Every structure is written in C-alpha cells, then in structure tokens.
Length: 147
Image (tube, rainbow, N blue to C red; front, top):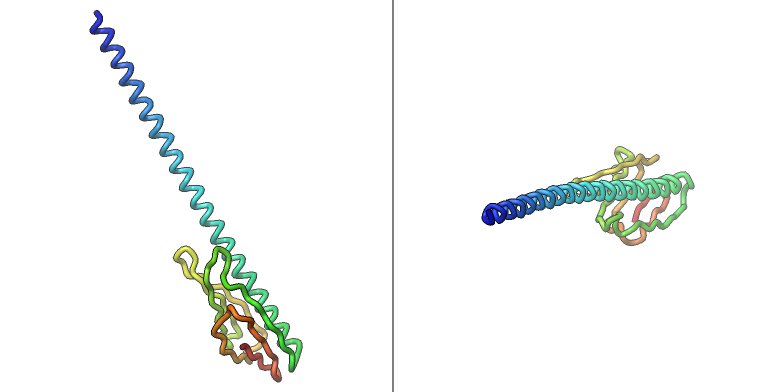
C-alpha cells in the first residue's frame, strides 16, 4: 500500500512538472511573438520617420531652389542640408536638368529609396559634390548655379 501511495505522489509530481513545462513553453512562445511584433512596428516607424524626413528635406530644398529662380537675376542663397537623415542614414541629392527633376536617394533597412520633386527650370549648372557643406545657389540670368 505504501508503494502505491509513493507511485501516486511520483505521478502527481511528474504531471505537475509536465504541466509547468507546457505553461512556460506557451508563455515563452507568446513573449517571442510579442517581441517580434514590437520589433516589426519599431522598424516600420523608423522607415516612416526616415521617409518623412527625406521628403521634408527635399521639399525645403526644392522650395529654396524655385524661390531663387523666381527672385530673378543676381539673387544668391545659401542652403544648409543636414549631414544625415533620421536614424543617421546617409543620403545623396541628384539633379536631372533635362527633366526638371531633383531626387533624394538613400538606403533604409536594405531597401533603396528615392523621392523626387519637380523644378521650375531646366537651366541648372551644378558641380555639387558635398551636400554636407553649405550650398550656394546663385541665379545668373535665369540660370541656377549650384556650388
């Protein structure tokens, strides 16, 4: 009779151990799912933030450029662009005078991103090599010189 009681106690302890292991496993799986979801949302927010910041920089620069053109001959303006986008991401700015287009390019989480805006003139001369220094825009007889 004592052996039967010992076996029942051992069986109960084994059952408790199995149930505890199952509960801990389920809790761990739920935690990992929540962590993955939070990580994905954080990444989406960072991408959104970078996209918005890139668009803001592009729109401000385009506005400065177009305003300078409309201001007329002899107008000069100095533009300061940030060294990096949000989340410390490097970027470049490209001009396409034939298409009256300006683009900002960067890579974010392994994806190449481009935003573009239209300029009101195709008469552009640029030798812009470093966007981290102050950029001088000058209107010379309707031609925009970028230095």
